[in-house]
Length: 93
Image (cartoon, helix red, strand yellow):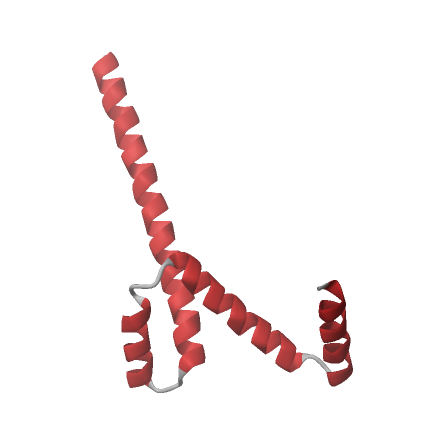
């Protein structure tokens, strides 16, 4: 009976690893989609960019997505608020 229990533990561990790998793959795909859609509305251009990004690390993809989010946030800011933000960032340095 202990042998079957060990098999069950190993199977559960393998399942957990599979779920973790799938979650990482899903995250990468979501990050790539965000970058590609920001890159261009043209499908061919998106396809080329997607092929390039396939080899980037997850950390690099996350950084690119953060830059996109920041750019969109700054574009949405009223000019006075953006000036205040820049001033506080300069003072912080």
